[in-house]
Image (cartoon, rainbow, N blue to C red; front, top):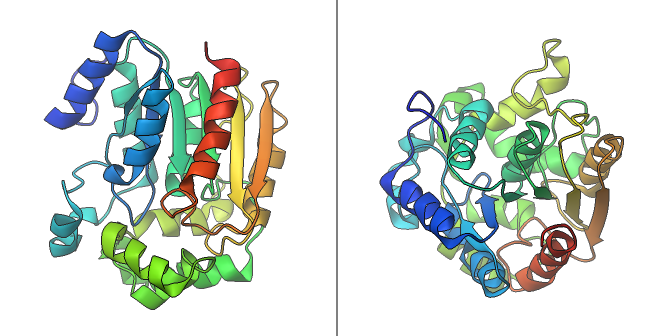
Length: 287
């Protein structure tokens, strides 16, 4: 159990932790990334609970409760930093009676790997993970996807929304326009600009920086890295470079590339195929 000196968890997050502990089931913690809220994980939560797990999906610190509220108040996302968000999830995990499975997407995939590097995860699935320090590829599509934030240094202190055209390129390039518009209208919220700057300059920071991951910890546990073949935001070269670094760990490390899938693969109409891969991996290691 944690003390009260760490990040403050919302009442609803504490209630989810209490529910998980009362269940005696293995918990699965879902970690969302930029431009989404934790509610985007609901279909995944339903699937894992139908298969004998208990789930929780904390938000980032001070996340609004709804998409509508988030769009009205983009300022609440300003200045969120990678380590601050990681500590928020570690605080939640420290209150669980069992070490959880941790599943994250995009920057949530990076944070999931940071949590695993702390030895706090029973198993980890990182989906289209943002690059951590030491991941060197910078594909042109990833740079273009990040340009709406990185093109203006002032965005490091702001919450930044994407236009539909930017979302369509970075997230929904593998979808038809109707589904892309549906996802944008349903899920898209502003996001903190700071983490993108932290990731972009991590390899120039001799002290590691907040995107550093302890990939060598023998207590890291089994890890699956899933990438989308057509992902513009986290191009396959980034996912594969992450896998190559993590594969040096003594624990099991596996990689799956989902054919024809873009960055929206956790929320679009093909989410179940990705979730089934994650579930099958977890079930191999968690009884």
